[in-house]
Length: 369
Image 1: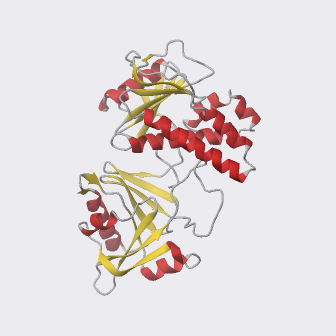
Image 2: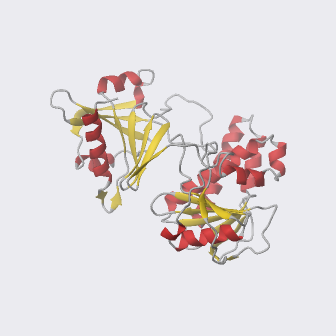
């Protein structure tokens, strides 16, 4: 690990650069602190994963925003070192790596030229203005967000956390039994990808998920738009399961599933809520949630480790979208409501009987990038 002054300078420059804009847009970049010799040795098996600059570029909060625009942080991480001669930081190269994937979008075939993992060194990756993910390789250390550092924890979709409620509904689906539980892993990937795609497409959204096998007596929403027909996402996932041993067809059906998820995510970007069920049928979009005001306490739900402190969540600090989601979850115990915020976090609400509403403050959390 670098000495403290070096690390502090690296963090300060990265943070200040993330606050700037280029043509009215926030700067997206990923930077790694590693010397040229050590960085080069780390890719000796696959030298093409590293591009070296003929002339180093000064690493400052002014130069980084302009330089970073040439490299997408999903595929590239900018390498920085502090020269021993003058102690100043310089950009000396760029690591190339594969895009983040999940069970649906991962490459199941390894080919020559596939760059693989992110560099296994101290890395900062921007999420938004002043918001960073701190990582090493594919492992997340934590996040800086709203002035706080949040340590990495497993995704709330683990079966010890929010996932327990979703899993209970999925177990009623015949596909869960016939697939020996593998269907659950696909469902989890679908939900994670749906939230991620919705987040990058709009400035805020609400997604309501109802249990298909246990419809609510009072749905508490006014559907502005309803579609006749089906996206057939569940059927496509079933095809993924049936073709698990057929690599070519498996890739084709996974690609089809990803495209369907992207289409559904686009529906959530219009004003109002997207309402779907656990069979992934689209029930409505642009919907208005009409549940009565709830006075239940809001409590933070168990994290991915299953740890639950029952800490209160101050719902009064949040606006109409969050309050509507809270009221809806309180009135419909068989529902899970996600709110994608403009400031980055994806929050989930789930009614805990007539006692309280459980809240997961950030469904972006994960142990991995």
